[in-house]
Image (cartoon, rainbow, N blue to C red; front, side, top):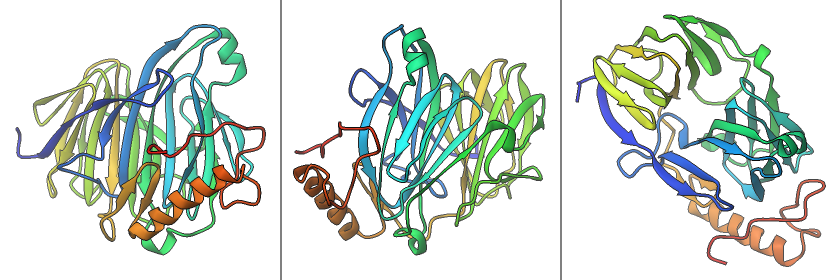
Length: 300
């Protein structure tokens, strides 16, 4: 392995229920986080026939922000701060869980009727300790609000942070670096050593070479600190560049909960269980408007 790559992670297939499968990259036993990124899932491409679709029932989160980005298809998002929106390719859904939020993700009715191909990335970024217990919030960033520019023949889109002189409007209280690369005609570019303290490149489609080393689709290369690297992508490739400042402390992850203190996770688990037992009436967690289903704790 080239000296500019510290670790190469191959994604593992996980079943999320209802036949919905993802390729999970983070967390990994040899590398739990890259910057604030603690969870990295790649879903699809999957073809849904007319009448079928994705149904991720309401479930809770704490201590993190979920970041959803699509290459193809559409997903309907609902949450307990009142959001009800459809995300499409090139846009970003940024949901800050803070002290607690519940959301669902489903195929929108028009796409359920017609069928669709769905392909995208969902990541979780850990909130710094100073923000772990803030009020939950949700922001949808349309495609046209996110900077796009030519990068070595590819179209680059800055989803969070700063890259190559372009700044995303996404606000996050920690150093973050997140860029989508669409190399329709192939691409060649350099990633400087100061792009972020911790950096990774995930190949979501096609193939790439990093300083000459082949990286296949479904693999993430963790770049060595202090190394500027040369990236070459084949035509029809999708790359995701992710990283940022090293997190302020280790994070614990349990089901959908992330925290620096395990007591916060224990409380969230108890609160979700209590909310279910109370039918979500006057409980710590509620359900999004119009939802009646939910996902129970894995061990219940």
